Amino acid sequence: MAEATIWSVGGYAPPYIVTNDMLTTRMDTSDEWIRTRTGIRERRTAGPDETTATVSATAAQAALDAYGFNADDLDWVVVCTDTPEMWSPATACFVQEAIGARRASAIDLTGGCAGFLQTLQLLSPLAASGKRMLVIGTELLTHALNWRDRATAVLFGDGSGAFLLGSSDDADGIRIGPGLSRSDGSQADILGKPYGGTRYRITPELVQQGEMHTIRMEGPKVFKHAVTLMSEIGKTLLSQAALTAEQIDWVVPHQANQRIIDAVAHQVGFRMDQVFSHVAHYANTGSASIGLALADMLEQKLIAPGQKLLSVAFGAGFSWASQLFVVNRIPASRFLHAGEILGDAWGWDT
Ligand code: ACO
Image 1 (cartoon, rainbow, N blue to C red):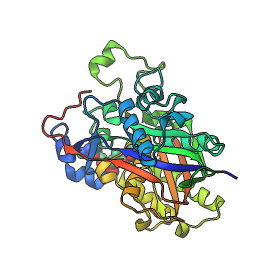
Image 2: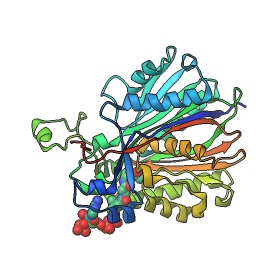
Image 3: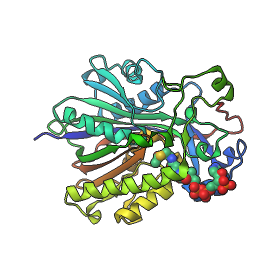
Image 4: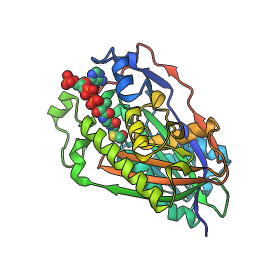
């Protein structure tokens, strides 16, 4: 039976590097506090002319170029994001136009930091049936931060990861195995970006406060739930697949922060040398993080045929997910990550 397969991977980490020390010019924080609480040393921000659609299109094109795939042959372009280009139309429509996928249908999905795995689970049957699709996880989270809120502003970054998906009948790459996902909307108030939708409309007062479009989070509650729920769903998937932690070659977790990653690894029973993390350099990039991580792992040649990978993710909603991948052949990949320190002039006004 044909199975959904990742044919190629594209990753784009936008060019500007914002270090922890640079944040200290904006808020009462320190490199030491951020590193010890989160493991983050720096994050990327998109350039002034970049948007969610352009960043997505860059990662998407990287995936297409890596494989040598003609965009005209795509059936679907799907963007998973919580920081869309506009309310309407879908970011994916701009991407579809930018990459020239003239026959494709384009749509967005939103699921917080677990959204990319949820999207893969939703779309895998379509890919297995022969549809060729680009699934792109993108966030410009630095556009959604309140730079006066030091408890959230230090955690996030911008980026995009794209998978070219198809059926295992056509080509070999990384097979998308079984996955699980769950949501609990009763926890919606704990983490999110509430203003600007239909429940909390933007008012002149909110605009004046400059906080209408920013992320709000109860950090310690998020931490506790993230660790518990990612560990549980990781263990459940392993048990359903009759696998032990030892049999997993790589854990590719959502890159939230190093303490969450360490705690989940410990609770599920992984050694830290089984766990991939580059959160130190890219921070939390939401829906983009697992695609970016895989692009980086492929560039570093960490992935080999026959390996089994487990991803776990958690985010706003709450929603959380786990996903198994099996490497048949190493997929083509391209990871664009040349960066430069933004310097004193960096300024993302909120
Ligand atoms: N710099 C310096 N001090 C800070 C900063 C900062 N950037 N942010 C908060 N503080 C202060 C607080 O004001 C508080 O001070 P107070 O005690 O005087 O009130 C103090 O630090 C809290 O310190 P800790 O208790 O050590 O902080 P904690 O261990 O709770 O860590 C953190 C905070 C990092 C936010 C933690 O709760 C966390 O990681 N939560 C998860 C957040 C997350 O990853 N969210 C991402 C979205 S969901 C996902 O992707 C999984």
